Amino acid sequence: MKKITKSDRRKMLITAAGALALIIIVAIIASIGKGVRNKQEEKQSGYGFSTAGFKGVTNVECLNERVAVFTDTSGKKGIMSLDGKITQQAGKNEFYVVSDAWLSRKTAVRSELSEYPLLVDEAAGTISKKQYNKPDTPEKSAYWSEEAGALCWYGPDGFIGRVEPSEVALAPGLYPVARSDEPGAKYGFVDESLKVAIDFQYDRAGRFSEGLAGVSMGGRWGYINPSGNVEVNFEYDSIGDGIYSYRNGLVPVSKNAKYGIIDRQGKVAVEFEFDKILQGAGGKYIANKDGKWGVLTVDEQIYAAANTTTQPQSQAQTGNYIVTTNGGALNLRSEPSVNSQIVTEIPNGAYINVSAVENGWAAVEYHSSVRTLSGYVSSNFITEVASREAQ
Image (cartoon, rainbow, N blue to C red; front, side):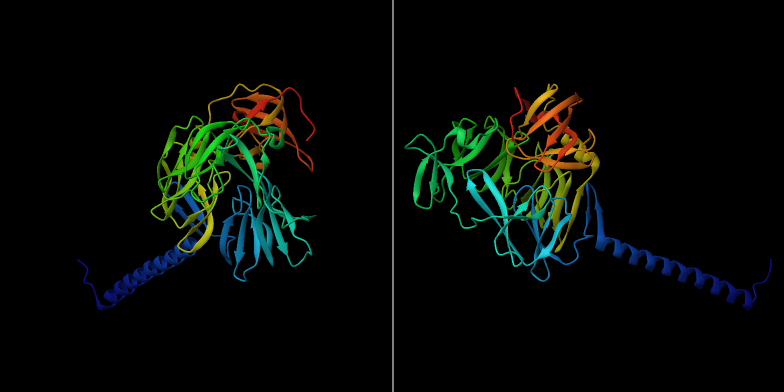
């Protein structure tokens, strides 16, 4: 056996020390890299969360189901799409919602760049140059009158008159109304002919979307179907700043002061570990976790599974159709797939032309106020009409 000399021992110690140092360096680099990644992106079971693009964003709020408003460190406000993309950079703006008729909501903005309040182009997510000349016009709202046995208009001075179906021209579906404007008034639902369809029994109620509507009873929130039967139990603290609607089979809700996402059966798709989750689009949601804003992306498998169970297959054929989503917008996609790009959102009640139907997808043309767009929509949310009327 060869005798180990002092020189050999020194070489062995130096080699071991070098290897140990290399391991430590690699571990430090990996830890730093992990820390950098964690600042930008976090991957958990069922979702990904990225703060990229949200530097300087201190708050985000949904104004409606199409527009979110963000605030930066200087207090200026801009516009985000519901999947977290900035469409209008922050300026010295004040955003608010105006209403000139029941169920009609417009997003307006006061800006130092304009003498008049402006409207927001919600489809593009930008501030329109069109002047909104009546920013202080008092809102008129519709409440159910027991005395008249009908839905009636009420303004700042009280009763105005009955709401006629021809005034509002609702698509087939159910719409939430309150029994009065008094605090604590109960909510119910009327159909497109303005007849009571679900009795006044809820503390609050939202619009139907994908066959479900959020309602509250006894301080808890759940979701009901058009028959008034409970589909998602009353076990949630709230369902958003407003009343969030299902989109592609998923909806954000809160429980025990934390937000998560559930499917149509109430099964948890994203655990309740967020401080805030806003109404989303296409499987993406603006969210806040540990004081940081970012985009929460639901895993494709969960998103696809939830989306395929939103509605039974329809029997749509080619011809003229109207979008019937019970209030929400319908995604126009570039390909017949829930994972394809969203071209635009088609408003409920809009007319479209269907050229082909296959596997639950309809190939359509949508004539917006700006241009004609082509793509695919779910055939579950369109209804055939005799002829296309001018919009």
